[in-house]
Length: 83
Image 1 (cartoon, rainbow, N blue to C red):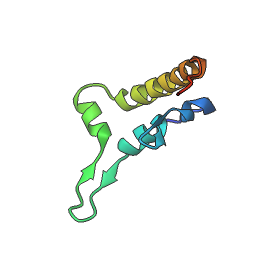
Image 2 (cartoon, rainbow, N blue to C red):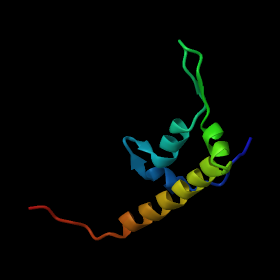
Image 3 (cartoon, rainbow, N blue to C red):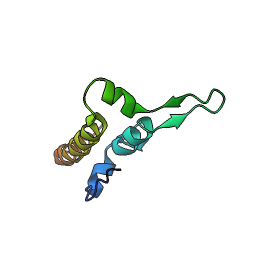
Image 4 (cartoon, rainbow, N blue to C red):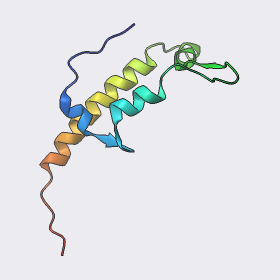
């Protein structure tokens, strides 16, 4: 098990489809089992198959960084007045 700590709170402010980008990635890359068929979907299997077992970790770390930077950019944009 890998634990990521000290994620800046502002990283959760970047929202995609109603969820923070971090939560979106964590939801999509969970190990799941289809109830009816019993088929297990483990994204880590694919990462191992392509020879990059760090794929999901690196993706999540990138999303955290991009989220923080995007929130900073958006905060720095000038206000817009609509007529």
